[in-house]
Every structure is written in C-alpha cells, then in structure tokens.
Amino acid sequence: MKDVVVIKCGGSTIAELSDEFYKSVVKMQKDGKHPIVVHGGGPAINQLLQKLDIKSEFVDGLRKTTEDVLDTAEMVLCGKVNKQVVTSLYQAGGQAVGLSGCDGQLIEVEPVNEGMLGYVGEPTKVNTNLLSSLMELDMIPVIAPIGINAEGTHYNVNADSAAAAIAKELGAEQLVFVTDVDGILKDGKCLEKVTIEEIESYIADGTIYGGMLPKVRAALSTLTGNIQSVMIMNGKSTNVGKDGSVQGTTILKSKMKLYVS
Ligand SMILES: Nc1ncnc2c1ncn2[C@@H]1O[C@H](COP(=O)(O)OP(=O)(O)O)[C@@H](O)[C@H]1O
Ligand SMILES: CC(=O)N[C@@H](CCC(=O)OP(=O)(O)O)C(=O)O
Image (tube, rainbow, N blue to C red; front, side):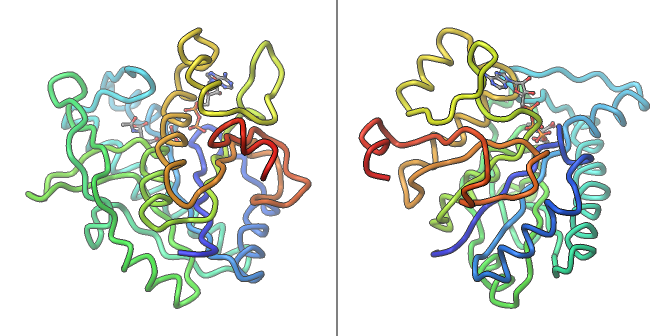
C-alpha cells in the first residue's frame, strides 16, 4: 500500500519521546501519509519482571518467554505501553487506535524455537484488511507485539520483527526504527548508509550485537519488497520519515542503490 510508513518505537526510548515527535507523526498523516506505530517495551517488561521476581534472559536479542514471562509482557505491552502511545498521539492532535497482534488476528505467528525460547513467535501472516480499514478512517494504528497462533495461543513477538512483517505485508513505503542510539555505530561513529552485505559482515565481526541484531535482521527481511531502504534513528530526533533534517543510518538494498536512490 502506497504512502504507508511503519514507525517502530523501541522500548529503549519510548518514555523519552517528545511531544514534537508525536506531533511529527500526526503531521505526517495530515500531509497524506499513513503512519502505523509498532512499539516495544523491553525495559518496562524488565521492571515488572523484577518486581514480581520472575527471571528472564535474552538470546540474540530475543527474550526467553515462559508462561509467567508471557503474562507479564502482555500486561505491560498491551495494558500500559500501548495505551500511553495512543494517548500521546491523541494529545498531539491525532486519532489513534491501540491493538495487539491478537486483536482481529492482526499478527499470526509460529514459534521461533519452542524448546529454546518458549513462547516467542515469529509473524507468518498480518491482517492487512484491518489496518487498511483503520487507516481509511484516518486512525493511526498503534500495535503491541503480542501474536496469536491458529489455536489461539498467545506469543511474545520481538517488536522489530512485528514492525518488519507489517511493513512487508502492507507493501509499505518506509520502515523506520526509532531507538536510543543515532543509528548503527561502528568505532563510535554513526554510519550514514550501509548495504545488506556490509551488515552481514558487521554481524559476523561483532560490530552489531544484542538489541541491534533483531533490528537489522528485521530490516533485511523487508528489503525484498516495495521498501527500498530502512532507517534507524534516535528517539531524540523530533522528526520521522524522509525529511532531510533526520539523521540516522539508512540500510540500502545494495551498493548500486547508493548511486540511484
Ligand atoms: N553497532 C551497533 N550500533 C548501535 N547500537 C548497537 C550496535 N550493536 C548493538 N547495539 C545495541 O543495540 C541497542 C538498541 O537495541 P535495543 O536496546 O533493543 O533498543 P530498542 O528498545 O529501541 O529496540 C543499543 O542501545 C546498543 O546497545
Ligand atoms: C521476544 C521478545 O524479545 N519480545 C520483546 C517484546 C518487546 C520489544 O521488542 O521491545 P523493545 O523494542 O524494547 O526491544 C521483549 O519481551 O522484550
């Protein structure tokens, strides 16, 4: 779908996103784009897990999810963070509707590796009709990354992969990851543009690790469709999208695109 911009707001930065940030999302819609916000909430989940004395650990940026961890993640993501984002967009002058991937089978999933990660799901199908209908009503969909399988079991989904699946299935124009760093850093400097090939070498040599791994893997998985480039930017920027003032890392399909885009 033309003009769709999927904006993934990382849990690392969500509490610090400014009014200007939300206003820029609403402005984007008033300028004729269709923004969709997918949010994370890793640090908020950690806080509640700690309070409840429930242990959890990450493997390659994915949280091992037992039943207790799933319940906690779902409470935080769907009950708290999702409604905060909806309210912030409303206060910025927009109309937003909060959903999880379980509502209307928005994000159908299959387990990534049940033995190793428990209830962690990978999106297999997205209810694009539901999103299109909301966007036709000028609503901004705000999506929490909890998925559902054919039997109705809920799964914890990494928010980066949820955003990528939505962007890919809708044929979005742009996918933007908003996080707590300026972009992909190498030797302390933010890389302005990187190609798929370069990313693979940065994963192999350890330049890219931890929470950046699901982000770049999600980015790479989308670069097969409509999307020509994916952006990673800092939540401290007050603008999202292709605006020239936005700083960050742009991930491009290949070196060729450096010269034609
Ligand atoms: N090469 C890299 N450049 C920038 N950040 C990186 C890199 N490799 C790993 N990271 C880590 O990835 C983090 C962002 O991922 P994450 O904490 O999951 O954020 P979010 O909640 O926004 O998804 C950064 O804060 C940083 O610690
Ligand atoms: C499976 C998995 O790792 N799920 C994530 C979901 C939230 C998320 O992705 O939040 P961030 O944007 O802050 O990373 C988690 O439990 O933390």
